[in-house]
Each structure stands twice: as C-alpha cells, then as structure tokens.
Length: 164
Image (cartoon, rainbow, N blue to C red; front, side, top):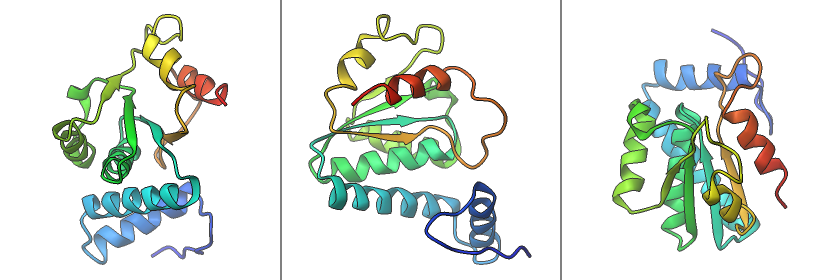
C-alpha cells in the first residue's frame, strides 16, 4: 500500500490513492465520496463567500459529478445556481450521472456548452451569465487529467479566467 502524507493540499496522485483506499479497504461507495466532497465544498462556499448566484462548470468525469453535488447543496441553501456542462447529458455515466439526474429533477438549470460553437458571441448564455454571477466553481477536470488542455476546456477556462 502507498503512503500518503495528508496536508491542506494534496497532489492528484495522493487524491487517487486516498480514494482507492477508501473504496477498496474501507468499502466506502464512490458515490459517498462524491457526496462528501460536494457537500463539504458547498459548505465552505457558503461560509466563506456568501454568494447569491453561482455558476458551476462541470466536466465529463467524476469531478463534474462533484460539481452537480455542489449545485444541489447550494440550491438547497437558496442560492441561485446554473450548471454548465462540457458534454451532452447523454454521455454522462456512473456516479456523475446519478447526481446530474438529481439536479435535473430539482429543476436546477443545466446548460450544455458546445465544443464547436464555444465563443462568447456564439453562446449568449456564457456571455451574459458569467459576468453577472457572484462565484464560479470549476468542476471541470479532476485527478485523471493527463496531457495538454484540449477543447472545449481550453476556451471555457480562458473565458472563466477573463471574468471578474
């Protein structure tokens, strides 16, 4: 078994190891890990930032699923939430899909960003909504990310980083 040093910030490799230990050694279902990550992040957001409106950008993997959990908990605390996905709803699977289905049933707005058309002038939802939000949550890429940043992530991150 790998040794993991736990501090305030851990590496992606350490996070993967901790998840593996939790699931394999302690039989904690991965959806419970996702719920805890999302719920705790939402609590930090509420305590530290006190937002009224939040835009959450969700990638296609489990980090996107964490974002869906965050959206649900913020929404349940009367925060206006909009979720932006980087892939079609039909492409989600596993724990992320479970949490996506929940927020859809809760009627939390979910907007799919088009990789081909992602330009602020082509996507009025992006151009209009990001600048008017109090907080942006990046749930785009997780510990499994490897290599160079690809589209649509590159353009989305550039737009997010250009906002105030």
